[in-house]
Amino acid sequence: MSSGQPGVLLVHAHPDDETITNGVTMAACVAAGARVTLVTCTLGEEGEIIPDSLGHLAADREDALGGYRAEELATAMAALGVTDHRLLGGPGRYRDSGMMGLAGNDRPESFWRADLDEAADTLAEIVVETRPDVLITYDPEGGYGHPDHIQAHRVAMRAVQRAGDRHRVARVLWNCLPAAEAEARLERLRADGPGRFPDVAEVGDLPGVTDEASVAVSVRGTAAAYAAKQAAMAAHATQIEVAGETFALSNGLAQPLWETEYFRLGAGQPPPPGARDDIFAGLTGGASR
Image (cartoon, rainbow, N blue to C red):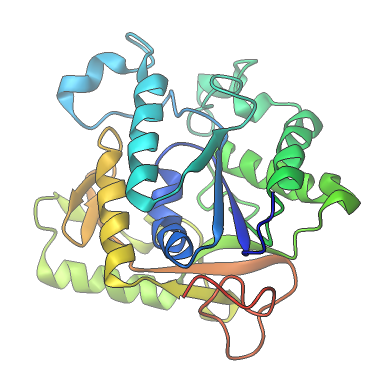
């Protein structure tokens, strides 16, 4: 499938995860002509629902949230310009497991219970088909300990191995946030006030927080990429409430809507010294600036 342009494959657990952590990066890659493929592992059926008017979709009522979130995902990808977005194994193959320790973890169809090699082989076929230079996913803790995020990390890393000699991914990046920058941004929010939200998040509420020295790549979006990310996040209205440059999940805690996205090196070739603003730096000439 490679067209000579660099390519990135993103592996995420639920609809909305991709936009919160990688919306700027995806929009920037699309604008630069890079190939972008998103694989979402579940439909997020167990998610909490923000609008009261959509509460009937919840897992303990109509259990219809997954289909609705698939439509939100399609709208978000249109905002970012991403045309290749897929569900791992097809719609409904793996179900959202819910937060760690909940009953949903034990459902046989939950992603947490997925056979690791089977899921990784399915993803490996996408790796071979799309031939990405870079794969983006979560760290081993899934950013904040959600079982589906942990499993997405495991499946992605195993898939890179199982693609083997058919296609070697040159660089694996894990989403992160530098601790000092995260705290500074939250302090700024506290000083300005949470706006429409009840309160401001603590740094421990944010996923993938790490020390600055661990950050290998940081992609700062153009105004257009940032606007695309804002629109894509707003499309995930069951899960996210957007207010200008801030947003909140169902807990109502204000967070920065990040215009810069950060990554640790998970595997493969590190970026060249002084070139940490491009996920493809040193691989194919770069495309995500």
